[in-house]
Image (cartoon, rainbow, N blue to C red; front, side):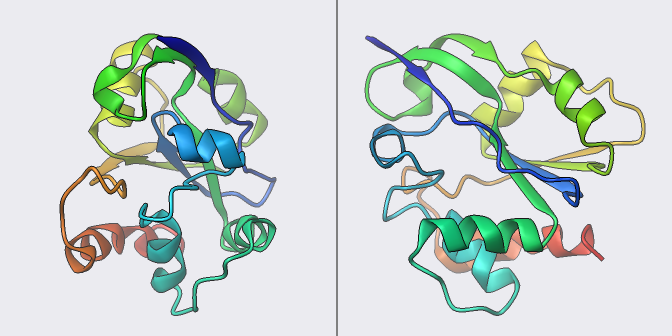
Amino acid sequence: MSRVKSFAPIIDEKSRILILGSMPGIESLRKQEYYGHPRNQFWKIIYELFGEPLDGNYERKVTFLKSKGIALWDVIETCSREGSLDSNIKEEKVNDFTRLFKEYPKIKHVFFNGLKAYDTFKKKVGFDFPEMTFIRLGSTSPAHAKKFADKFKEWMIIKDYLT
């Protein structure tokens, strides 16, 4: 079992919502890109939310995300894991959210990309952040066997928190 480390957050002073995953999978770590697996539907959902065609360039994806006031990070900073499945995550150490929320006070809404991100945050960080909302969404991972249309419908709530 190998020890893996997540990425720095995609965030800036205009960020109003934060989307949290658990830990990047093997393909994302190899590419050094959030949601780098070609079958993960995260980027497709985000672009579809704003009626834009999906851009294949990672740097432009990051710029697009920031332009919409969306920040991206993972709950887990480091963990031991064999493969990419969340169920294989062991010995997790979480990121410092107290510092992040203090540094970026415009963030008022946190969305979790899947159950593992939500459960780990609940257990190891907690929801004791006044005036913040926390919402769990279904995972965009290909391991989460659900039709794109159903995932997209669930993720549409994000736009309500950006207006």
